[in-house]
Length: 144
Image 1 (cartoon, rainbow, N blue to C red):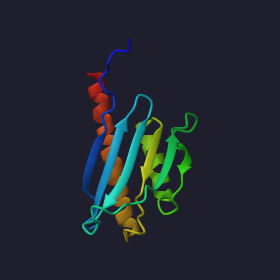
Image 2 (image 1 turned 90 degrees about the vertical axis):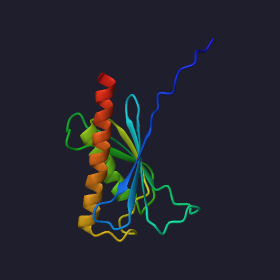
Image 3 (image 1 turned 135 degrees about the vertical axis):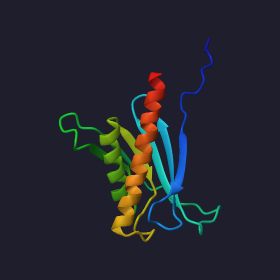
Image 4 (image 1 turned 180 degrees about the horizontal axis):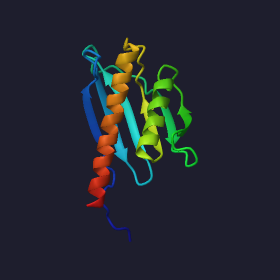
């Protein structure tokens, strides 16, 4: 006979305005799993209508390289050309910073948002900082 168990997944949904990108909100869906992290990224602007279907974007798997910790390994699971480079970059950074394998899905295309390099980097930095902060808070709660 099967016993009922409470769900283990407690995804966190996080939203905040992207720094230096006027009227653009970043949306993060972070799920802590036993052996990895799942992160989905998207953006919205005031002009987006509620019924508009947005593309899913790219899906990247990245993991820390035990022989070279500063150079994570990654593979593309699903390609959307406009978001591939950004998603790969985020996945590798998170794999290195979290020290666990990560799946990152993202529809963020900095070019379509009209972001300059400085604006793109400020947004990427904020997204990574927020995910890492939430990840570390989750680790502390597990140890308590």
